[in-house]
Image (cartoon, rainbow, N blue to C red; front, side, top):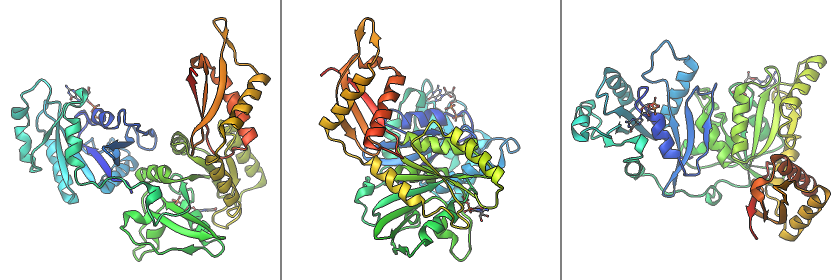
Length: 435
Ligand code: GDP
Ligand code: GDP
């Protein structure tokens, strides 16, 4: 599990500015999940070979009544999950009562808190921050987030104890096809996970490691190895105190990042809501292979079923390559059928196509349907090669490639999909000008 760094503080101290600085230009995947997190953000960042998830938490310190309880719960979950807490205060505004309240709340968590005094630009920093010592959280780090000042130093200081990344492929207890089951609360994730694990005679390997690691469940089915990345907390639910784990955006993001294939679970009875689309959007943005499972298909009238089916297919017509399954995790109906689609998606995501073959198909496609003229000259597409897998990245070289219209790119994508039978995975196409 990646460490989680949470930014905490009252409104306007500069948390989101700092968030942007930390995630900026570091190839960050930033999930802005409105509805799920209100305006809060989750980002994925790397600093000197150490990756972590940054959470700009809201809620804390904001007016009690104004916050939707669920959102407050999300912030609390994020704080509980955090390994590193940055408590941001405003050096210009000085120490306020609400800062002291937050400091008290943080102390009860018993976690290491780093105090960050922001907006030290244009003020006498030493004098401005001196009163923050009263918070009893040690010496504040000085930053001016909007100028990017002090941010590198801050990261260096707070990340010092983190180990360097061990790529997931090199972690020996994580084997085979990595499968994540994601979805908003109550759609039936843990019921499905139990089905997936319980189906046939699955051998669940005993796995050492910390509690955080326990979201990876290696198992074997029909001679194939898998690791299920459990965002639903199934493992812990079985424990004595039967604690129902809270839905966690951080865990969902982590699971998506680590997975080869993501099963997105939806609830047939509730249809598609915004949260579903945001979670799906994040999986797409991460380039993951996807299988959609519409759950709770049992006990519905034929009429309702056909209505739901039609509505779902319409809503997902922007990803026609993703297979949609209608299942009942509760009864096990249709669950086994997920596996062939999961494998199809996995194989597609890792399809290697030799350059001559790819170029040949490109030439055929261009012959069938020429790219348009741009100021009197035709766009030329010369050859194509693969630039990456999972998702497949197809790099096309040619002239005036900046002007390739989106519709033409889609046309090529469809051709490649059809010819190479790429199903269940997004494809990236990149154009490069020059030889
Ligand atoms: P949040 O509510 O804690 O997320 O705060 P924001 O990041 O939205 O920042 C609140 C305001 O403070 C914005 O107008 C920022 O431009 C400003 N701000 C943020 N960082 C700095 C800084 O380092 N110096 C100054 N002078 N202003 C800043
Ligand atoms: P999670 O929060 O996404 O992990 O959802 P759970 O697996 O805990 O399921 C939430 C509720 O939906 C539970 O009461 C389940 O019994 C119920 N549920 C899950 N799958 C199905 C299904 O296929 N059909 C029906 N009718 N109920 C289901």
